[in-house]
Structure formats: C-alpha cells, structure tokens
Image: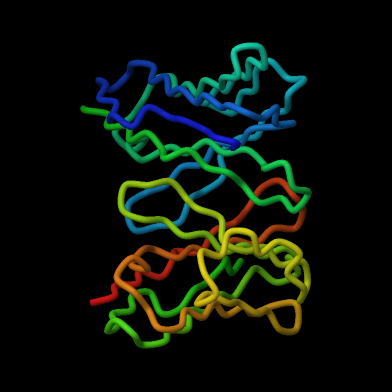
Amino acid sequence: SQKIEQNSEALNIQEGKTATLTCNYTNYSPAYLQWYRQDPGRGPVFLLLIRENEKEKRKERLKVTFDTTLKQSLFHITASQPADSATYLCAFRGSSNTGKLIFGQGTTLQVKP
Amino acid sequence: GAGVSQSPSNKVTEKGKDVELRCDPISGHTALYWYRQSLGQGLEFLIYFQGNSAPDKSGLPSDRFSAERTGGSVSTLTIQRTQQEDSAVYLCASSLDQYEQFFGPGTRLTVL
C-alpha cells in the first residue's frame, strides 16, 4: 500500500542552525508532495507544495527538495528560530482522484535558544 | 477571514453512546475532508466530499461511522455506539482545489 515515512524521533537543534527533515515514500509515484506545520492542539497549516518536475522550492527561510529517484523529499529551515518549534508533516495525494492526502506521522522539531 | 471551524472542541462520551461532530468549511470551498489523528500518529483519511456527495468513503473504519454534508457547506460526522478505540482528534479540512487544504482546529473525542 502507499506509504509515507518520516523520522519519528524528535529533532533538536540550536537556534540559527539549519533544520533538515526527511520524508520517504513507497509504492507510489506522487505528482506532488506537500509539507504542513502542526502546533499542539491545532490543525495542520499548509507550508509548501513541490511538484515532481521541480527539484527545489523555496519560500522565505524554507526550502523543499523532491528526488523522485530516491523517493524522498527533504525539508529545510534555515536560520532556525524557537518559533519554528512544531511538528512538520509531509503528505502526498493518494492514487485516487479525490485529493485525499496520505500523511506521514510527522517529525517534531525543537529549536533551542 | 473566517477559517474552518469545528464543534465541539472537546467531547467526552461513554462507550456505546452516539456522537456528532460538526465542521463549517471556508465559504466557497467545494471540497471537504475528514481525517482522524490518534496520539502520536499521522492523519488518517476518513471521507471526502465534493459538494454534497461523497465520492470517496474508503477511510471510514466501520459502518458505525457516517457523514453527511448539506447545502455544499456544513458537514457532520456521526459515530454510533462509540468504542474506546474511537478516541482521537477528528480534523476537518476544506479546499478550493485539490492542492492546499485548510484545516480546522479539530474535535478531541474521548470515549470512556
């Protein structure tokens, strides 16, 4: 079945460093991947979408890459800040044509001042 | 502008009772999704609405779960004869296209 995996271990980094989160997928070739941010007690918030024909996408301090050969997306936050502390979810649209998303379990990022 | 709202924010119920969870999507969004998030887990798709019809119900875990959407707007997720394994956060999202989804804050359901 279509599966998406993220590192379940929390990532702890020092303020100012670059955080890199990994998302791997199997049994599918998605046309695009999405990244969401989720804070405790809240719903996910959309951050970025990257298509299969795009190698890299940037938005302010965020950068996403998409390697269809490795079946992997990397999510980078440069010059990280304590306010970036949250859980980050990657997702792709399943093979049905309904737009439903298949999510990874998320990686929790903790940025220490 | 108003985002997706859900009610109640918290619901505690006894095993065997029925519960109704409500979702008010962003006005004009034709697509509506229900997901479930168990503790420490990713989001699990339940059902998708396009307008008032549900072309994809593949994620509903059992026939105790049902959902409807009226007027192309408000949606209700009903769980009958609740079980302890139904305890989770139920999230609703709406979308104008098949890309970015806008999520509500969720309803935390606890079945005792």
